[in-house]
Amino acid sequence: MLVVDNSSTHKATEEVNTALEAVGARLMFLPPYSPDFSPIEPFWSKVKNILDTVGVQTYQALKEAIKSAYSQVTLKDIRNWFTKDCYCTSSA
Image (cartoon, rainbow, N blue to C red):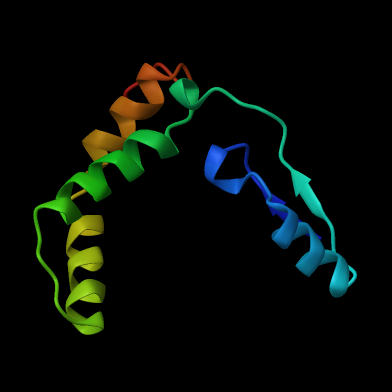
């Protein structure tokens, strides 16, 4: 079983379905959700924006850029995302 979200990029083509069937697997979509209420979305947005400013030429440089981007996500960012998305309202 291959489980994917409902992103349009994950919509299966006939070739994908044929390949999955060939190995006895099937495609399963996660239930729809609202990305506006998911704190992982602003996290990925921030990381991708940081990575967009870095030109990497090697795999090692990419790994280092990802590590650097992750380190730029602050506790304040995370608290703001959870507060904005109504997961919690206290500052503790």
